[in-house]
Image (cartoon, rainbow, N blue to C red):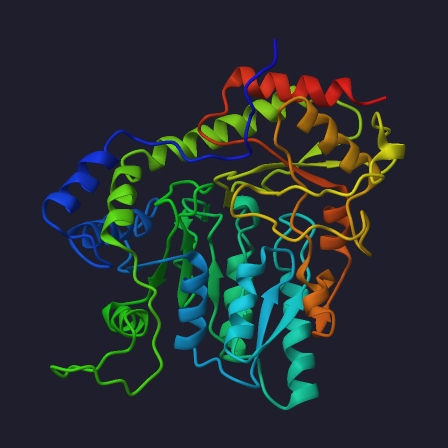
Length: 421
């Protein structure tokens, strides 16, 4: 019997969302502001300010239309503009770097450390020194990314950034609820980015938020997120602003999701533990894990690497077919590929495994292709040690969301085993 498709990560509704949405319609708050927006921000502030074994923090939160908008406004608030450079983790989704380009600045890419797959602090420091030597100016910001929920080495990143006087914008879009030394990601730097896309730990269907240091920082972000209007009875604009505020309807969904956020995080960690148990002794498969107890990942996605020597059924034919359909759902790919190959791609055994899992109705995807290998950024400065390219060639993300059951995990691992020659 053919199984229902097992998706990588889909949001799960709590049952409370309808209540908040109905209130918005009943009170006619169907605009990018309102009680749900205020309530969702308050819920998020309580969540991110929690600290294990320490006094709570006093971070503030602004709800926005997308995580990308949060990155954009954080960069703007850090003074990034034309001609500036921003150090960005290369191993990430494009939303970490594209907003740098929106502002006329240049993303400078920094590779990853092997343990976390995130920003390498040693390479970061070398990149800062080299950019200063080459340009005579220090970079305007540093953007580490919590890849698949895994915390970055934020203590060292902050120490380096403080020494050079460079603000840190934490891209914790995939790391909602992840902690380093008991402290929630997104609360270490000057700003922290969150995402509530439909595949994240919680969703507002689309949307994001920016964690700010205090009320004054929040007011500045709100100003730019609401078209930068001055306090006159008519529309007076002295700065360029953006229409980036979250809607009251979407925030209602978010308030409902906050009632299940801890359960969602617990589920993802349970799925990771089950993969850990089931992959024991499986030849050529390595599960990506936290380096130590300091790194408390939410395991938004569970990731594996396939040894290059591992033989997978069908790998000799892995790249013979050009993908012509959409990838990633309705909001995914719209341009058909001209060739099955690019100059940097997953190994044939990884692609063969993806195809085999797809045939078994299991959604699996390669890891992010490093930004320094993207054609759009081919001329950008990059400080590379080979880690992100190696992981991209060997890595694969497996389903981990709230709808993934223990039975599903057994089925996924059995399918992987069955396709190893």
